[in-house]
Image (cartoon, rainbow, N blue to C red):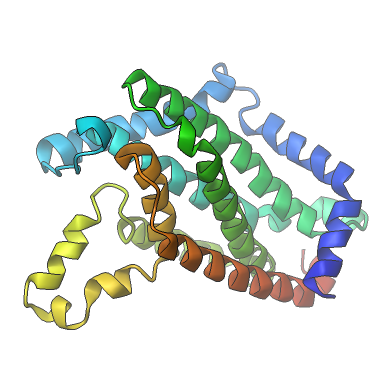
Length: 278
């Protein structure tokens, strides 16, 4: 089946998708005293730790933002919330088929719904976190409201990017369970290969150093990482107070479309024996 046929099938099952997403949202912090407050506490606690380590101890200097803003915590949150959403949506989506093995064995329904519902639930949390971040920026007298529509579009594109990865590896994870462990290791490397805890200028400055990295055009290779475009686009609008360059967004769009096509095709080819493998 083509991607249009698969999209139509998902749309026809939208009520089930809605229920599965609600199930994920309700079960995320079920049984905890603070409930959804954890979705804010976790990134804020991580931000506090990184701020102490990288801003105070290692003295990473954030760039000056709009209206002279010079705040490492705000600089960090723009990238950290974006990364946490992508990583969380990707990894929970990747494990969704294995986690719902009993449901898959009992009845037929579009298996993609399990992956999509996990990504959708993660997106709801991300949207709430970003809303709080917008309010924090407003409290610092930084008006990010004009950029909110474009920020939302970048967030949605990032959600599709995470879905594309999750679709591809969720079905592979059923057949090869070691993939989850490899992904965990890769995510650590990917995190530090993305300008989250440090400004991208640290990488750009390498270009003129004259060492081996300069000859390999390290910054050009570095920017092949699509998360660089996502993080920097969000940060440009919120922290720097200007529209992002169109090239990184266009690159992220092209990569996302290609990965979604590949991920959907891989899923379609391998989903037929899911019940047997689970």
